Structure formats: C-alpha cells, structure tokens
Image 1 (cartoon, rainbow, N blue to C red):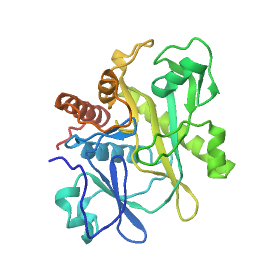
Image 2: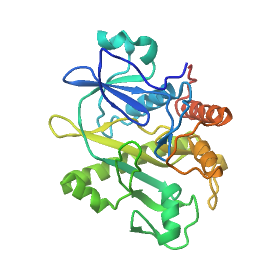
Image 3: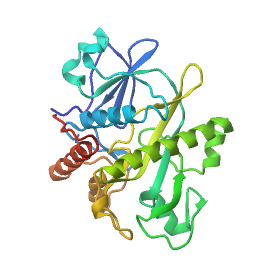
Length: 298
C-alpha cells in the first residue's frame, strides 16, 4: 500500500515536506517519516510511488552508517521495536519508513555538491559559463566530470516555491557565520568524496547530491535529513556513461524526462502514468541493491 500522507493524531505534526512528514515525539527527539510522495521540479505529484519511502529510508540508513566517521548524524534508531510506545501504535503506517532522530537546529540552506555538470548547473553553464556564478573553464560538455568538485548551495524554499541556487559567499551571509559556512562546505565535500569513491567501486557515478545539516546542543555540525538517496542525488551507471549527452540514471530522472517531454509548467501538480512510477521505483530498488548488495522487500 502506498502512503501518500501519514496520519498519527497522538503525535504532534511539525511539518509536511515535499516527501517527509515530521513529528515531535518528545522534547529531545523527532520522527522522520518518508512517505511515497514524489516531488519533481519542487512540485509534489498527485500520485505516490508505492514503497518509495521505504527504499529512501533504507538507502539513508546505509549511508549514515558508512559516513559516520566523516560527520556525526542525527539518527537515534530505525528499529521500530525500539521506538517509543506512542510511535509503535502506528506500526502499520510507519514501519520501514521511519527514523527516530535527535532534535537539531537545522541550517536554512541546502548543501549541493557537484562532481559532474548536469541539470540546473549545465543549464546555467550554457548561458553564462558558470555554476552558481562560479566561473568554469570554457568548452565543457553536458555530463562532463568537473575539473574539481564544486560546492554550490541553495536556499530552502517553502513548498510550492523553488529552491534558488546561490554563490557560496551568499551562504555565509544567510548563516551569519563565515566559520560555520566553511565547516558546511568542507563537510559536504568530504561526505560526497567518500560516498562517490565507494559508489564507483559498485559501478555507480554520483553526479551530484544534496546534504542538509544541523547544529546540536553544543553547536557541533551534524548531518540530518535524507542522505544520498535517489530523491536527493543523481546516480549514473558507470558502464553506460559518456560525456556530451544526458545519462541513463538510477534516480527520478525518468520523471524529469517525462515532465519535460510534456512541457510541464513546473508549478501544477499532475498524475504520472503508471509506467513512469513503476520504472522509477525499479530504478530506486536497483541502486539500493547495487550499493548494499542486498535486496529490498516492500
């Protein structure tokens, strides 16, 4: 069964994001619920992808474990039997798609790291020769590996609005702390570097990804939210990679391609054809298996 929206009346709903529902469990912890909603171009589609939230959760848990030596994360537990009683009563809805996490002061920026030129970065480069107003060499082609990994932050838009790519110097202004901005930049690049090196061993190119960070009670930087999922990253099969064109992918590029083929207005929610949602789910499951060596049961 697909979960379009969780309903847990005995928990305090803090927010419904594009994909996740967020509940307050107590004064120190929150519950992140990955629904089966699908967002593309910052628009939530009308129909969900059954089981997608469970795949996203398991992918994030894999990366939390692998990247724990790079930066601490907010995870308390994903074991449903260890969840508080007021969460366990919603087992039918939440099991397999929920994580209990520590409360953090979440930073108001998205930390995007790019190893290859694609998506909005490619579109800007064609116009101005830049990504997030960072000047790049002339003559780059679509999907080419960048000369060096780029940190290109964006604002965090409200639902219905679009995230805005910004120059890294603007992030320091938003955070009001140049030292914190430097920590975010370094952490994002280090996380991406370790993850992309691991993925390469599994035949996957991580073209780009988005991280989110928070601060704990001691103002230490902590990795939060989802991590390196097919929703927040571009995963390409290395054996089919060829610079100079768009790439096959293990992420929601199938959805983006379909929406562009129908001249989607990037603001109106629509229902996706079943063949698009089914192919997208298969790609999500495939990348999980390639990364972890395990099959996922939904």
